[in-house]
Image 1: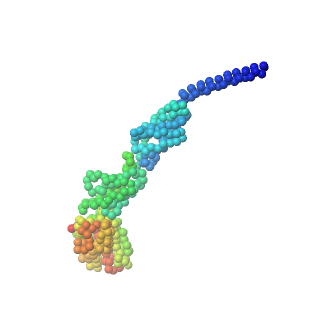
Image 2: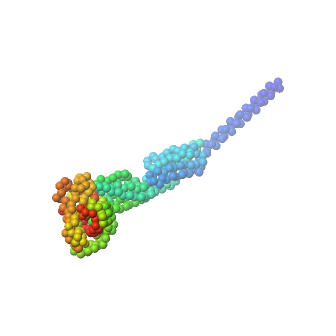
Image 3: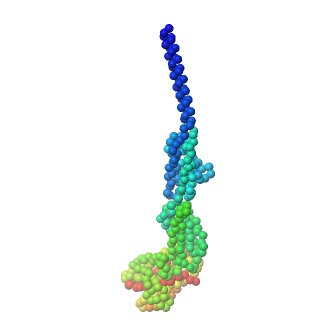
Length: 361
């Protein structure tokens, strides 16, 4: 009998204990339903390569998920797990990013954050040209380019994509020198621009901004100097000095790549002002040779004319008439000028001067 009473008492006690425990769980669940995430914040990692990419990492205490509303683009949002990030590409500008944190109970807490995306100006702009003014450019952080050829008033820039080479551009017969301008665009407000002063006919050695490059071969020297005899046909201040050094090879000379080709559509005669200070050089010939035609026609060695000096101690005009040479197309264009002097003999230290090299009809 005592044993039955003891068992009954134990069962009653156990029932009371279970009842208390269940009541406690119900109370805790009710409290959890009121919990929400706290300290909602963010980390913005903004790219510096003008891609517009922004990595957004939401943070909060007690959050089980986040919704990131980018503030740019229709319906632009993403769901992000705690510890994860989302990436959005922004145009340059100012935005408001909203982060909504959801707690384990489903309660939502939101916070907004300002975001400003500023693109950096392109750097290390490099302009290159080839042939009949085919233009390319490279620049760090550039998204695109605008090209201004500099030969018309109120010019509208020609768009050029990254890696693109613009097709040939033909310059007018007169005017210049021309300033080629390339503007590197960031994709935002920032830009960087560069210029290149173009080199073509006429060549007068007077414009400081023009690189009158005359490379040499075979022991010849060439330089821009003061006019040694500023009278008569040529009173300009600066001219080109050609020196065929002692022992220079007969085939020696100068060469100069031209940014703007010699265009036979505008004429087939090249006139050169030349000055020979030594009577012993009368009868020796100056060669004007045109090379590297735009379309490969004619080949090098065809557009070659040799004309002798007839004077000493005074400037004279020497004319090179290419219309008499067969095999040169009517609209031939040449991108390199070569000068040679007395190509039948080795050099003995002769000096001549040239100026105002131009194309005429």
